[in-house]
Image 1 (tube, rainbow, N blue to C red):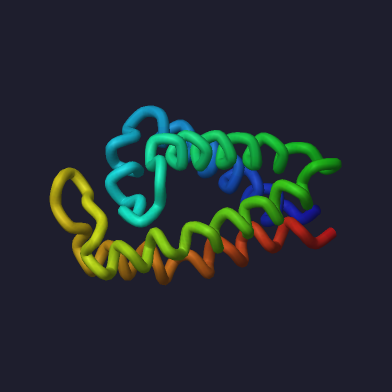
Image 2: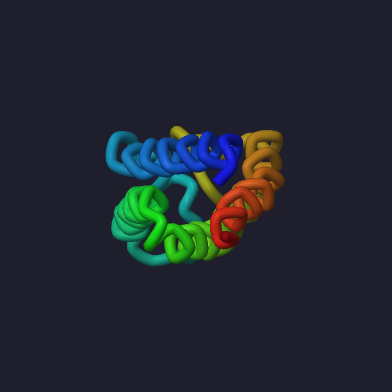
Length: 123
């Protein structure tokens, strides 16, 4: 693995561990952006945090890296409706609708994150 890919892997691992931990540190942030049509937002938030941490840890080991990378890709695809719901104004961030600019940034960054994780599905 190239040095660039190793550094990128470390950033991916640290980023998903941090994101996963944030689901427990500031759950109200994540619960607020879960669309209202999805049931059990507290459970969904907890599961998202656990999966982000678990997939990040699995990225560390070569034997589980492809599985984890595909898991992250799938997770990011599943999260797309959350980002589109932000655009519709049906989600809350600190008690107010999510600003459209923030929603667009999050939505447009999804493909970048998907490709980044997908890179580790390759040998």
